[in-house]
Length: 429
Image (cartoon, rainbow, N blue to C red; front, side, top):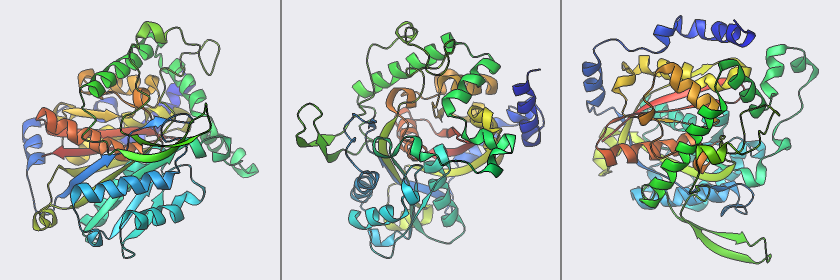
């Protein structure tokens, strides 16, 4: 057993005991799913959800737009789409990873400029790549406990303006002295390369998965399947060729590319090791974007005449070894299954963030998930991963696709920097 395998066993042992429990597949699936589909007045429901388009970091449509401006645009669109009285929104949680000060000041200002009154509270939060999902879960929990009646979970990131070496601070001597603590700052590409080798995920498998993501995304984009979830946003953009500042409307993900195959990806040079398997084509794109989700109890939605798109069921968050960050969904998904009382066969769609093809492939294979259910419209490899935004983005991607297909149960999940995983169960209506 390799050192990585030993660490994996130690980490997962206290979470699930054995492999059979980490991926529950037994029990009366039909009754569990039926129970999940029941409607109750206290259900926390989604009455509106949307995102901006995702654009290429440093060169896409949002390269000159501040994160708070992206967020304000998403908020305005959410108010317009839902027709909610902004005065009814009591709290707004925004996930974001890179802004100085967590973006707390700018995000409060963004809420005000978008049309929310001074009575709407705002907070920023950072749980790395799961920040957007954590924001939605925080609001859902506040509603469930009666702290608030109506709230917004959101996520935003401008990787064009705030991504880079400055986003990670230097560790103190104390943090450097502890081996597991020190591992928290190992670059994700480096640790993912190591994990791919330790877990035996070949470059061929990674490139095939990545090519499939591109192919699904371009097919979905051409068929207009993203149009319902994307709110167009008009921004200022500097033409790099002329230096002229223009006003453009961004309504499509600009990282989606046609003609990508496993063979074409196989020609790209590895990024983190000469003999490595991870490269720019099979890892998530650096990108900019924002997303927002309006939540309330079913009874409140019915009283307000709000359209119900789906409901939030349960969430899980787990820690794993920092060097095994990529296994996060493998640990988090079974835990949320247990909370919701379901198993993998009850799920119609899995939206699993494609941080790296290597970790997504490994998690799916270890959990025995049906590849046809994973990211049916492509994922972060094809259209981007604005760090704090992705978890909120997945909600609209999932719910609109479930509704389009006439399906019901979905799971969103992601690995999380420094060694964590998060997952949530949602039901479309």
